[in-house]
Length: 494
Image (tube, rainbow, N blue to C red; front, side):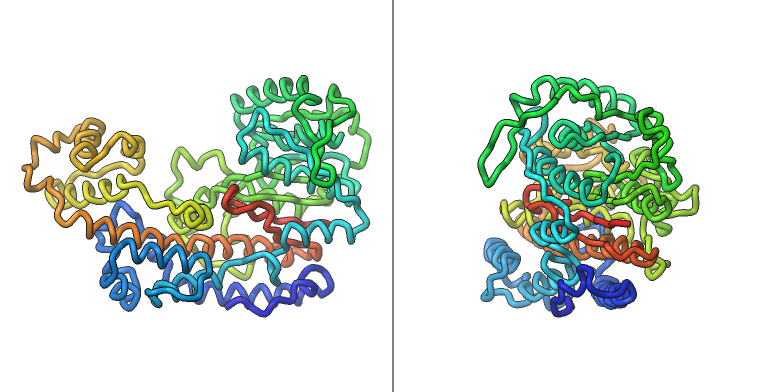
């Protein structure tokens, strides 16, 4: 269970050893709770029927209580429990939701600062908290919100640490460094490994730069003001590099900024949603490179982390997201304390899902999830030699209104002649409403573990930094999780 809050003690007025002991204790508690539930986190929803997840994986008391209640009643109780209401009609469901939440990191406790607490922390270091700058054009509303929130804090940390330049790892479209260079006059370097992404980013930033004074607004005491200053500066540049934990960032910076060639540079290494191993590699670069004064990293795509348990499962989608296992360094765990502990790829994939958004919007899984599970069940029973490659049928769900349409669309892709080889009876659905109820509830129950798994990943990274001797280490809940589900950032200052 979460310990009693002592956020003042954890946020700087203590020894690193105290923080390490407290993190050990908290990780022990989470892992003790999570380990017997990892089979639920790591199961495949497409195997919901074939592997009988409902009966085999759910705790008996929870399953029995849900069997007695209609779907709509169960859903209403789930939403109420997830929102913290005290009274529900299904106590076992309330107990599951509340228990899972108690093992998640939350703001304003020993392990995570709120954004306001982080503002106060920056001020306590004698730095000025910069004003936010809002740009709504040329990016989604989600990205606009993230860039507005993060650029203010990166700029403030840049001031607090007297950094020379901001380097964004996996910058992609370059939105964050564009805001830093144009809005805060901070030399910024976007590093990404993809040619096409970088080429598009260069052109996009040119357009943003030309229209900067028309589209950028400074937020001063809640009111929007026009941004003044030089928008024609050339202090945002790009580099095509595949970042690992051994990348020479100073060398790349000086190549792109020759004016820094003879300077002893200090870098602020940031990353807005660094995929897979890029997050851990960024922290390792900070830990081993004295020229990096600060790291400010928002992780993403946990399923793309390398982990010994699935080191042979890498596929084409994972090849560009970090150093892999070739260098002997894995994405999880990072800390020495968790050496040998594994989460599993499906568990890490679950960690990237958002229970906050699902609850806020009352989202249910697509009916196609049931159809896919039904198809898997039929093929296993009647065509046992057929194997369906994962992801083959992802694009057909929105086009199918019922199972018959789904089977037709799937057969057209798989070319198995299912309709000719199987009878109408074999393709029929028995008790569809009951199957749908169980799948929906299992999906939501499993989703409760998402932030528990994510908490292990985040605290492991914080612990790694403490193990390497750093004292100013903070986990910050940076974004609204409904808007931006990967809402936590890891901040450390040398």
